[in-house]
Image (cartoon, rainbow, N blue to C red; front, side, top):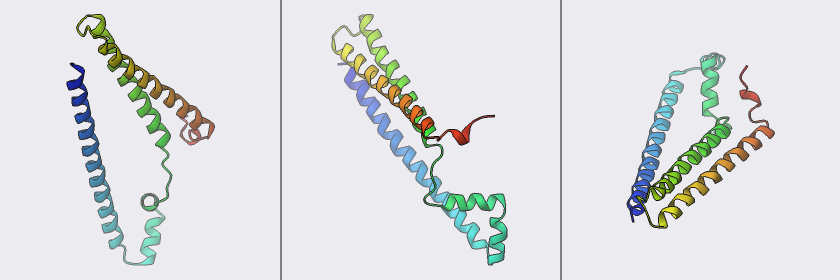
Length: 147
């Protein structure tokens, strides 16, 4: 019975995190768009635009304005999220199994609540390993090697 309040708290926390991170991303995107619009409004001639675009900052601005740019960090992000989910779920499930072993949660539902997150965590770990392997075979890490 103790698993229901814990699960409810985790669900509420997850929903709050999703809402607040989405709000933050929208605000950052609006701020970037307004800054870019103000910068483009200040350029009054074609020559000034071409001179600005020949600088490093101008190239970065044009790259940021492209809608179809590919996200180079996507494989790293998905791998890291998979590894993080793997670790958190395995520790969470292990805590339930430990509580069952210590007779704090003596009923068999603690075993179920312990094994399910461990299985999910193992699945996330396998998915992260497969993502890493596929990203390497597709050559997505070739540009990001450290020297």
